[in-house]
Length: 181
Image (cartoon, rainbow, N blue to C red):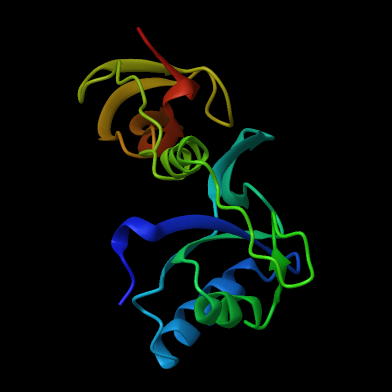
């Protein structure tokens, strides 16, 4: 059994677009080959990217390091062999070839990468309360006013009841699309 103190993070180079498949392959190979005491976890660093286009907000996950997977493992001949021969892995970053073992990431590098991918969702400044009258400043309902009926703080959304053609209509919009009056 490997010592927990020998655990280090290494960077694998993969075919671009196959990062998640390599992560899954690595985890299943570690289990099927009895290497759970040597290969602990694989991570594909991703970050949420929000884009606003034509008044619509689109959020998607983008790979921070396309073509790379981080793996936490104890470096031994057996674990090195299992990881290196996982389908989709083209090699270790920091290995000089000819069968040499790779250099691990520095603890500060690992802490920085892991903290950036484990951050909570963005915090929105909630300046509205249910019942507040707001004016819609952008979008199809720009210029209309009405009370806030619902607040979704997690996604930064409001529901506002507006009078359209003599009829009350509820619309959902981003915090940034409304201002308190």
